[in-house]
Image: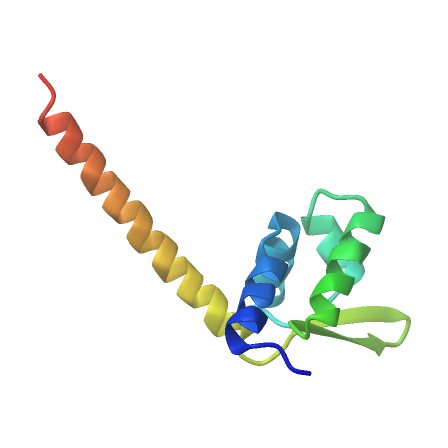
Length: 109
């Protein structure tokens, strides 16, 4: 039995709702990277990074492959677009907040 589309979308956004996972996705935007490079950029234990990568892989957001002795991770199709949309939305939200803060301060005595 399949789940409704809105439920599948909610699960995808829940999967993205972790700071380490978002950081991994940001780092992978420049292309595939080995685990050791991700670990050098993210201040977490190797076991924690491994768990977060497994979550992203199970969700189909990233894929992994071997390059010699290295395990490499790469973004799957469309993820970079989703991250760019998130940046645009966050930028608009923060701009609106800044505008409201300026307006609030202008009306204070």
